[in-house]
Image (cartoon, rainbow, N blue to C red; front, side):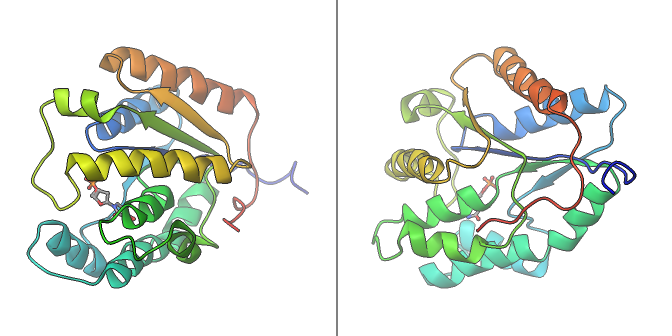
Length: 218
Ligand code: 2DT
């Protein structure tokens, strides 16, 4: 049956700390994939354009308060409302490159000051979301991140928070060891990071096409 149906696009997630060059690398990867005559779509979470996204945006900019659990579930809802659109794109053969996903969702909430929200609790609402075929973790030390011009003004852009986030990312990925997670040294110059990413992408392509919907997080 599978041999007759059309292959779906790949689901690729790019994760990392603030200032790791994530968004630039996503753009470069999309351009390179397009250069191979493949359909590709860039998606970013949080998607600040939707109703939930506008609430998240106000919170991140410090214009609104939310309790830690409520904002956490809004970030998750912001992904859930995008699922059908993502599955449709994949089925039409489009590869999706996602800038932040459930991994950021779990670790940023669990990294918060008051520690009243565990990583396990934070992962729960992600269960059932489409699982990526590849996760690129753009790893950079907080020292190197600061050297890149410091952080912005948003709520989570503080060095203590970033250090915790980095530790929690590593912990979460070690627990999700059935996923295809690749560590990328993002402290390198832009083009060399892009080259590392491209080599990993080519391996995914070589592993052959995928069919049906991607599995879900369990
Ligand atoms: P950007 O700077 O990439 O726009 O991210 N975040 C993100 C969460 O706390 N939970 C989530 O589910 C996601 C996707 C990371 C804005 C900030 O929001 C954080 C940084």
